[in-house]
Image (cartoon, rainbow, N blue to C red; front, side):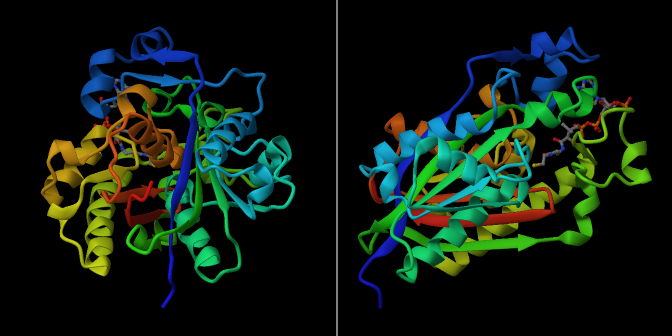
Length: 330
Ligand code: COA
């Protein structure tokens, strides 16, 4: 038996200053603030300036998380980045961030599990620390979704925003840290959210305007149905693995895609409003950055107490889903 557990020892985030409100979107596409609010819960989203590379957001979030953990960039053994809109296919987002923060002793790679990326990355990182291979792992979820959105397509452009969230994982006392995790993929449903890259099929071209071949497309209602089911099942599964009842959970931090998805899953799980962390009204869907950004906001606002039981749960492209249960140890 190990005499330690793996837990979060630092958090950070970066949200760009520039705001696009629903009212601004009314001037860009055929939509209304009323429609967006009622169907999604989103009121505004933040956008990175066009001439700034996306990894700079992640670097700021990473520096905060490292400082919050009380370590230095040289102490980081591994960087795992998650993103749906990389600046380059190569170098990876993780390597770009490593260079920017001068974490010269770290290995670095990206994980592609779309909006579930953060939960996947935590699950991967946990194994490295548990086995003693690494001591400190930085996870950065860095998402500039404004760059893969067709700003003339009202069914997608209203949903997404830009931000980065980061955590440092390290050793914590045995009673705290990660209890259980669950990750799953459903490749047979991959067609329902797509962002073509080096090959664009005729099918994918038909779904988009000419010149917009590399933008995000989704079957909104198919994803919606999957999301409510996946968030509910993944939460139940991880709690069962951990031997914890839903009543013992202090806070669920869900992926922030649509308030109706969160409420649908919460109702099935029997969660009350106080148990759920929601930030999407101010950020929109920021993909894999949703959970670490929401977590950092909750931690810095003093909403988390040592020993609180938290559940992270996400779904996304792939399709993928995942959940993780932990005892907050900071
Ligand atoms: N403003 C006004 N009307 C809009 C609109 C907008 N921004 N977007 C779509 N509409 C219209 C549609 O054209 C449709 O009109 P019609 O009935 O005349 O054809 C009507 O509103 C209803 O569209 P529908 O797609 O059924 O709406 P919805 O209630 O399912 O909401 C989503 C659409 C995309 C918000 C919702 O399906 C969703 O959130 N899905 C999950 C997507 C997701 O989470 N993706 C991220 C994965 S990580």
